[in-house]
View 1: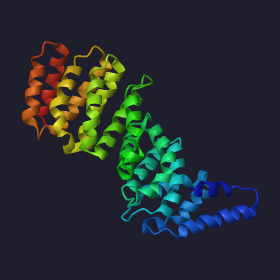
View 2 (view 1 turned 90 degrees about the horizontal axis):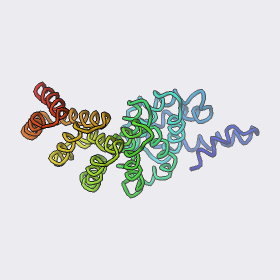
View 3 (view 1 turned 135 degrees about the vertical axis):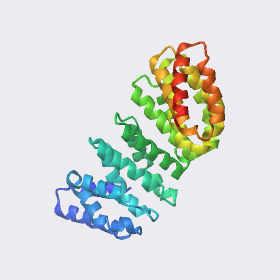
View 4 (view 1 turned 90 degrees about the vertical axis):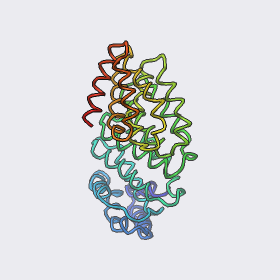
Amino acid sequence: TIVPHLTELLGDTHPKVQAAAKSALERVGAVIRNPEVQVLVPLMLKALSDPNTHTKTCLDTLHETVFQNSVDAPSLALIVPIIQRGLRERSHETRNKAAGIVGNMCALITDEKDILPYLDSLSPELKKILMDPTPSVRTTAAQALGSIVKGVGAENFEDVIPWLLKKLESDESAVERIGAAQGLSEVLAALGEGQIDEVMPDIMYGCRSSRATTREGYLGVFQFLPTAAGSQFESYLGQSLPIIIDGLADDTENVRDAALKAGRVYVDTYATTHMSFLLPEIEKGIYNDNDRIRACSVELLGNLIFR
């Protein structure tokens, strides 16, 4: 798009070039139809002209804005460069707000063609902060990724699920694996049951991998998918809970922790609606020959009783 090029020209050494670039940006702002964005045009132009001084203030204001009208192409032309800078900021609070704006904005885009030109620039930044060490940033980035995929359709984001599945198997760090699990959950929830059906065999297979880091990564999906997908996930309880129970006996502590966290999510999410299913499965665990499964099943039963 032309706005990034115009912002570069704002720093040109020739005053007439600077003035022409500023005038062109103002003309972009003048054709914005979204009333919530329209009132922020002066602030956005300041953020584009002097990003070091005004980016944070602009992101704060955008984050606090309640968008009620569709976000049009001229709005995106000014907002996206500011978001991109925010996603690269050192402050985790700023990164978090920038990702949150992406999610809110994509929910109100009525024509997917308006956001398509920005996917190549937004996608790498969202993927990067999905692996952020700060949990709140990962959560917001995952939700933003789900929102943008839902807005543009899977056909325009064909690489995202294969990329997330690969990251679930990462040997780099547990942070990468948990970020990928969270991102995959939000993307699958956004795309619906058909996509969950398609990917679930891969998830189940990964939970039984010979590699501990892979088992940990794929079990991590069950920490987030029930909450993200809601009722869309209920039909998968029968095939996924036994996998989680088996994970409680894993030889690797990180895998056992991932399985236990997933079990807690299942209890918290389905205790009131699927007690008749959860209770027998947890009772089986209490009488299992493996002492680790017995100990964790007792904990899950306690959580279930007190829900």
